[in-house]
Length: 205
Ligand code: TMP
Image (cartoon, rainbow, N blue to C red; front, side, top):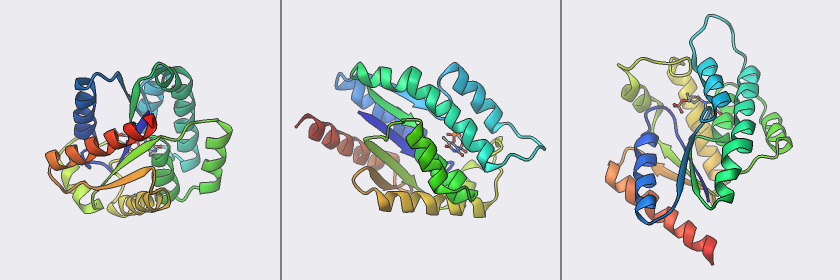
């Protein structure tokens, strides 16, 4: 099973990924964690380029090509191999992030991304947890830490990204679980765990 986590900066994805990974391992599942962009050697190099602050203008189309280069490579070298071995793969972000950040956030054409995605023959996660917080809360949570090229974007950008995620969740209710990320860590942990078990059981039926 392929699970992804999505959300704007400071939504608590990483904490919940760790918790889910550990609960699934306790049940005897093999779990592989991925992050995007990144994970593979090539992907981690792309991640550095992607997040590095620069005075050069980086168009959202340039971002999309970098992200899809990393994504295709990840698919070929890690994702499918682990799924084929029967692992539960948990991805810290996947293709929804490109729709939310590059399309809703920066105005890139959604049809164009849908086209690249389809032509790259990539998978869609079986289950996606979208951790929803306001852009204002996100900014508060990340203030004080060193910020990367994306994190320095203004509040309005993150408001658009959030709107994008909410629309994606609304369009795919069977796949995307929209969580109120203002809730406590334990409450979120059990919602995520229960939903995952439900999906795993449904896959076995
Ligand atoms: P993070 O996952 O460690 O928060 O950093 C990844 C950053 O890259 C984050 O700001 C979201 C951004 N991003 C995109 O803009 N588009 C994408 O498709 C992905 C995967 C990430």
